[in-house]
Length: 220
Image (tube, rainbow, N blue to C red; front, side, top):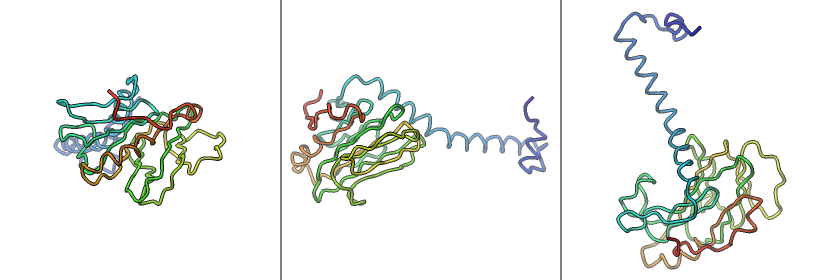
């Protein structure tokens, strides 16, 4: 059978288990900790499922304004304008960057992320796994170089292509990437767009068939 209340008390080192008030507070505390631990896993998976249902790259809008990039699984998408304050997918969005976003599914094979030479412009490609903890963040602050980055899951043991500049190891197979590039005011957006159009991604087996340039501004 299961574990009795007395056994729980013994294991937990609890001496006043018969106190109803204490038992209620203990149950609440355990439940709260379980929620805090488990919520990111559920939220991350739900977002992954929503993303997996998207048939093509697109730009999500709210009240007619660009709000969020809608990538497909393994294929990143970018906003070509600042996001709106009404956006809720990203908590507390910045108003000095252009965003890119999608989810990678590393179950069957790795994903390749192409990054151009950003020059002196600040950029970061933040990647988190199912707990929403960041495991990799190539970008300006890490001195990352242009080129192809290979994101691999925990069970992959294939050969690394010669043109890969860095291998990023994900703790599990469901990865969210949030890409940000600094923009110095609205007048700087037309300068940044061509850079973002060359940030592309795809699985290792398909990457050579993925266009090296995508006009994200032209997406519906």
